[in-house]
Length: 400
Image 1 (spheres, one colour):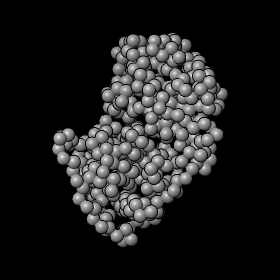
Image 2 (cartoon, one colour):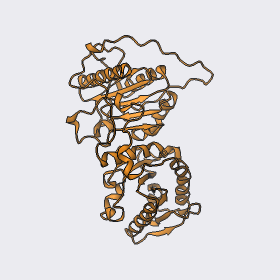
Image 3 (cartoon, one colour):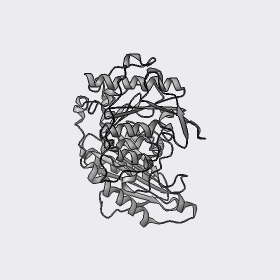
Image 4 (cartoon, rainbow, N blue to C red):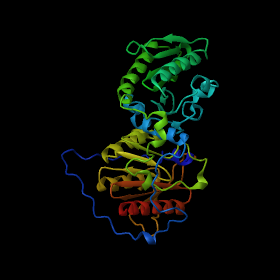
């Protein structure tokens, strides 16, 4: 959901402190018995779902891109300074013009150069909260064969190269197959790199040096090479299914989407990314403040993330799930406590009181076993009903 996705800036909070490694692991108190038949779930479905397999080629392509996103390193894994995302946008795409790759909007002939693009995943980040430093874009796109990836990387570079008469070719010593160029008066570098069936795109845009009229090609090439140093081994582990096998791949991972509340039909068109499930820390790509959220992500051992009607996290254990519940739904410096849902006292709700615009007002979270979910709403009752429905789904999923 566009506004809900952006609103996760209010969800990202700072962990006050992480326990010493020698301290005993916290043990979660037994979960109180909740009669899910007494919950106010409003119009929302309370049943787990079996996601099955993709219903059409486009859905299958999006699932492939989500799996790719689980292997694509986060910007802050490449350079710890890149923890600022700015406005969240679409990461998973079948058309680059609809992704965070805004420069692709000028590629009117992209489909001519890459008509057989299957799908891709893109990340945008920057190293300054006010966008006065460097912007980084990392993307990877899936193609039917390695030869097509090789051909497309060269074709996209030719078209990209021709967009500015000041463009100059650049060599990346460690990666001779990379097609790279820079625009000196803009202190920007772009790179296209074939990697198996993937085409990797990297861009760095240094607004700080532009502002002061400086250029530094060595800095740009060093950043691009270091980026590939991290991306290449990580993406070597990604093996996309053959094009004819894509519709045979399951949509879900470990039943995560099946445990997540279904997106309301009325919200069609308001979501920036498709329904998805991710492994490892890949879900931080969808967070407005990944640098801060990484603290509870790691402390609570989050290893699965699903985005459907709500957001669902799988943590290390039940104690970690409760800690994450309190991080996501408890009050912080930009919010205050709000009423808990009817007959669900184990939930936490808060109201955003900060000055940012376009932020969802209410947030409710709940934990069950290893799972923690967060629901949002412009009205408190809506957020309460969403999290109540989510809790019922988690309980029912355990009974199956």
